[in-house]
Length: 307
Image (cartoon, rainbow, N blue to C red; front, side, top):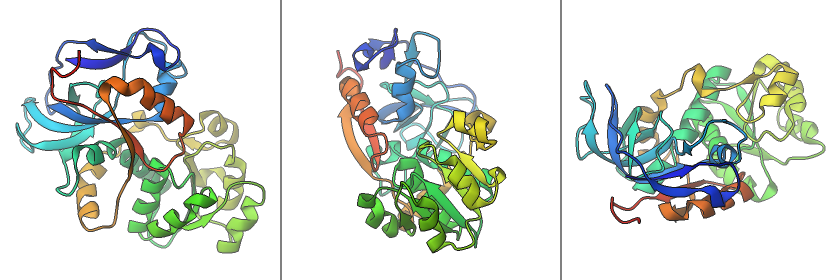
């Protein structure tokens, strides 16, 4: 199969489309003919050597496509079904991928829409679960207009939380459409938040990693009420929980999101699509606009088109 890989760290030019052996699913897993795969900031961070040291590396943790092989014990889906999900092996930007966690694609979504979902909704749900977001609480989300942030806003609103979202002014109307009260970044953030929540907030989620953890801690009444998914160094410095997937993934959301989408209570826009062989350009766009609204997605043609 054709897959994205790099054998040295560097800029987007180190990315290659290479031929790799077809993967095989293990027990409980499925293999899909990939039709779309999500692009995340972690992709270019890996490529630049900021996360993992081993070489070579493949990329991609989320994809959507058509099941072509099922592993032992799989009964929930079958060959020919449209599914989306998470690829534990990190090689979803390819013609074939093994999904460890998966669910049927909601009927109203195409493959690109579905591929944009898994990482954002899992990360957002995991953080909300760790915070204990519940009906009646006030949640502050830093970086509320990006893919993870907007997912967290909508999922918190579904839980019955009052959500205040921090974002740039151009995204304030968007946040209001999701059910959040927007406030702007920058000096005076605390005063702007307290104008909406005079007694502070119950909980805070940092998605942007923009150095505001001390302010979030003050507004939420302590580090124990704050979770970050983006600021590892800040979390260690300030005693805030850094949410990691290896602590246990919130994969339950994959099976729950369809009903929210079909009922109009959740959506995640696709910011742009690229063919698999233009993955380098997708990386450039991702790094230049990592806080842009919506997800970037690679669209994968049927096997044999590339090369």
